[in-house]
Image (cartoon, rainbow over all chains, first blue to last red; front, side, top):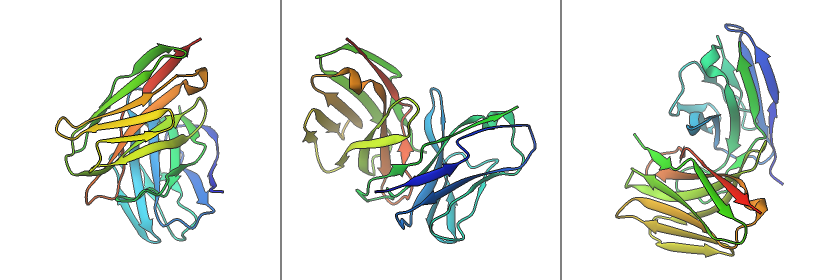
Length: 114
Length: 111
């Protein structure tokens, strides 16, 4: 069974304090992505990765970084979080363009930046 | 860029049919998806349709695609209280490697 793990699930932090949200998968999928979900805006893609060491910007990459040093992990890094990054974040695996692969979503990380 | 729009809210009575609508702008979309998000959970893929199809039926779910109007709909027959959730449509434009989601429609089923 596909499993996408995110940590932490909930985080309250302060402006400017660097944080990392981890994402790991057990499916050996090449394609991984990060989304943020905000009321009335749906899900917006932050970054995606086609494979190890291959990452690209999604629709809202500003203020975020990612890395893909190994296939199973795709951490999301906020170097200097700001209140407008308060959101619900989802990591997803699979579902690349032109594919009917099911896209599996992690359980979500609710981040509050004060 | 791509833009996918949905109405934000829909309320139906249990047993009635629900129709959730979605419009998209990228005419090169290859796949269009419907996802369901239950409270406190991630997104679950419900069904998808390839852009060369007009209709797809899967048990209580019927997906209709009007490519000319760039309009996608999801019909849920005999809607149950367990169908209460937020429903997202999503498109995968041709040649791109990212999925663009709609704003989500919150479906409320009244017993």
